[in-house]
Image (cartoon, rainbow, N blue to C red):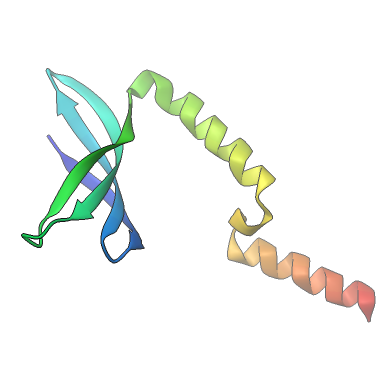
Length: 91
């Protein structure tokens, strides 16, 4: 069972793929960089990570900590409210 969950374009020749995969009866999450080959097909690189279901909640917690540290990573509606609040204070 391989199921692509998301593909994020990095540039015209590379993309990040997030997929659910199964190996020897074990399910895992694969986050991997793919490149566009001369045959115009996408091929996986060695650059990536596999995360088991037991580690997934720890991974999400770490991502949440990263997101909290990056103001640009907040949802657009929250960014808009913060920016509007700054303008309200100035005016």
